[in-house]
Image 1 (spheres, helix red, strand yellow):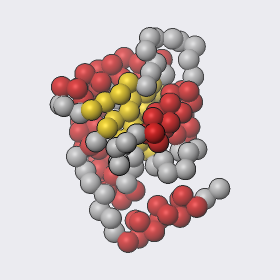
Image 2: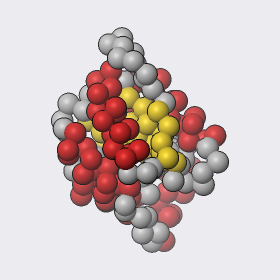
Image 3: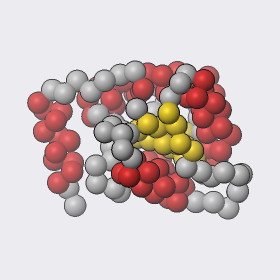
Image 4: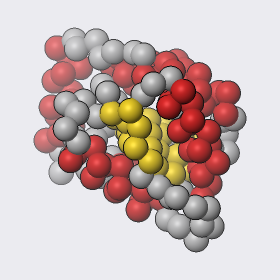
Length: 148
């Protein structure tokens, strides 16, 4: 599984820590920015970069991780793209539910509300939970892709 990681200035430090965590745990990961702390950067830029990288990936099931202050803005930006199912997670239970029921392919983290340790726990749960694939779940994903 290839993982694409992006964050604005609010998520910059947490992104660096999670990048190290992912590499330590032998995940193939690509840092899509920001590459330096820029208090004037904008989260839609990084959501777009991560989604573009996921779409051009040769991996059949690429994943994205996006981080901003609340997790909300960057999640909204990611969900503008067809085929992206991003969710903000504050707990491992939310991460497991998002993967199991909704086959989320982008995890959004709120840097102001979770610390490094909590983020690792959430990330671990998200990466290690499969999609249940129940017919109702699959039907709903198709319905999402047909919206707007």
